[in-house]
Image 1 (cartoon, rainbow, N blue to C red):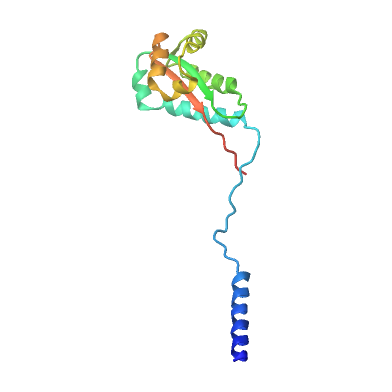
Image 2 (image 1 turned 90 degrees about the vertical axis):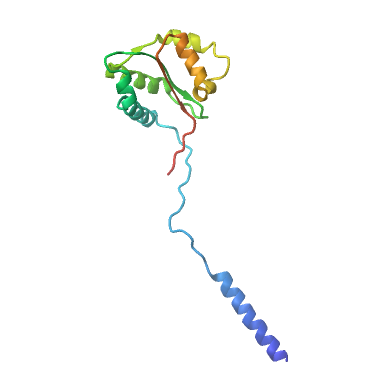
Length: 157
């Protein structure tokens, strides 16, 4: 009887140790790590310019600017990130791209800045609430308003 118990314990211990020694591999690719690194404003500018190019090539904008140059208020990009982004450069590139397209007239940026200070809500409302943007554009007699946001920047290795 002792021999059977000893043999059973030995077999059980062997199976347990074999199970613990096995490694299960679920995926061959390691997950990319988020890296804390300065954000390159050139990359953000390039992405913004691609979006403006896409906007200019859209059927709606082509139709709206055919035979006329509507007034546009360019508020530009708003930074909702914790990063320190160079929005002046990015917004300058956006403004330059629109100006070069020669399809719009531009609302006075100083007047836009002054009127935007009168917003009852926050800049977040300007992006998320269409009525806030419409009210600001109408206060400038602008036909259109261009505003965008950068809410998150994720860099991967």
